[in-house]
Image (cartoon, rainbow, N blue to C red; front, side, top):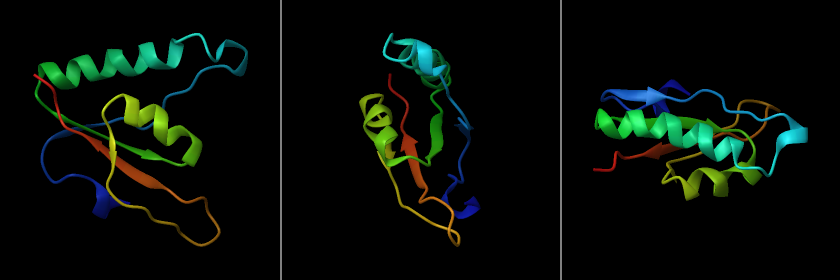
Length: 87
């Protein structure tokens, strides 16, 4: 996992979650936008590790790109993702 982390300064976004009863109401997108505003203000990379393939399109809509994948033993496949700051 450490090999996937950017070497330059970045924000690591380890978790985002919404209660299942509240999904589909834009709460996750609002949380992500809140974090990314700060990244953009600081002109910093944003990095995360997607552990569910079905979440990748959500992150891509927010500007993240898959930069690799790894799996340790029988653990789920993890896709590190990176987003460059926007001006």
